[in-house]
Length: 128
Image (tube, rainbow, N blue to C red; front, side, top):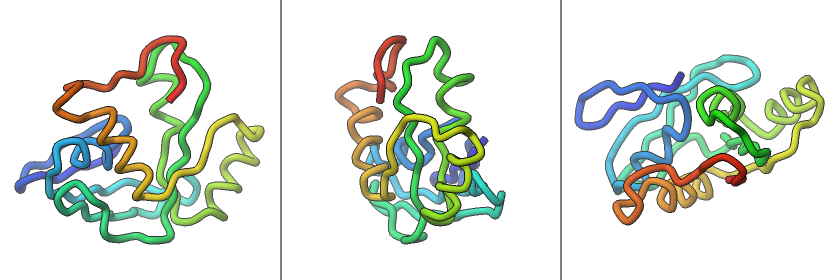
């Protein structure tokens, strides 16, 4: 689970902790463990744009799922760097998906969480 701090309020989310403030253009701090080593990663988001942790990358699974929270969110994680992402993928049998920079993660979040949609549009049978 990821921590998301917006306007001094601590929130928790299963995934897309960068995408939520990106979609609303908010200032926030995201704190989440690296998907490989567990080290806490902190990413500041200013006006919906990530500004810290430049080596961090996100793994975005692209397989269809029946339950987003159980089958997608546990694997859609931030990693300290590309090496940690590759180690995790090797251990998991090289699952299908793609690597996103923090800027790409925020852009995807803007599409998923924008005021135009108001919710995540990922549904059964759709890949992110």
